[in-house]
Image 1 (spheres, rainbow, N blue to C red):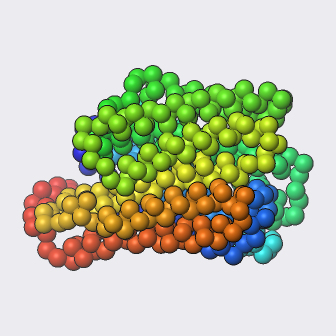
Image 2 (tube, one colour):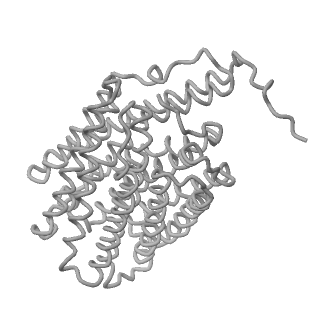
Image 3 (cartoon, rainbow, N blue to C red):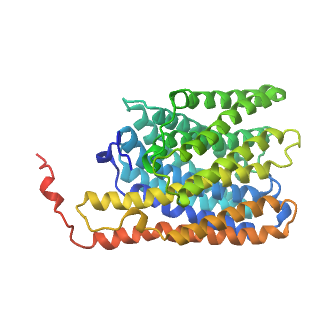
Length: 431
């Protein structure tokens, strides 16, 4: 791995990102069971309550938790900017988001206005408690690299996505659905997927692919221009959606062009990596590139099908692109954090990153995950595939949880023993 340009000494406590990482698959499991026991017809509509609950269990519970946890780790390491009171911020924002999301999902499923009202307060407080310190930390960065610029843009869209989401949830809690509800919901979903998650993934890939896979660095145009061109396209799409949706397709083409270019670039970078050793995380990056390309173009042509396949677009981009990247990176980041923190405490005799996760289980998890996505897509035509796909998805997520818990158990076991090297000798005496 290439650690050049990283501020390793600025890393936050291991508990800061891990609490988010370990909780994320639990919500994906919930989504899987809900799919299994829901009516296939209801899930085919983006506006059905079952579809909304499944979507937010995945987007907030899985994507959101992993990405917020990753930001608490990456911002200090990649940008050298410490997040203020990171222990407090991550601990209590995690609790608020965890229970807030549970109240939200139960409130929407049961049409319980009290639960939904509690969720508005809890989720709003939880998001602000973690997003504001991250935004302040980004503002203090002196070396504004392309990755940091991507983080800044991503966090901006995260704020917009959260505010719109809270408005929509408040509307449900008060049973006061405005005429703009559908428009705001559409903008909310696009900014969350492409603005928050998409831009963050692109920015992080500038560092991750060369660091973990020894792939060639991205070209200057990609790093310095695309991180601004995609937000410009998203802003244009929002404005056209509000004032003149007849021409919104132009902005869609703009957005999909750059995401398709990113997918193609990732594929090429992986082909040119200096150590072409394939593992399950490489498979996830490759599959993500394929799903992103298919999903982006289907999003364009969905206009001509009167949004009949918008749920399929969500499966391709949300599941195939974002969830693939997030899952693949969990397999890299969690073992790295365990290895790094144990090494920093003076432990030498510790398993390598590759030894911390069962490779055969990881491969099985990947196969089941891809099979579930393909099954979900074809269940549009054969509803019987939905239950089989849901079972594959549930088993896949359960294996993922097992695989990321395993390194944490290794960390806890080793930490109970005496370090091989006493790092206290290098500790600075406080005056």
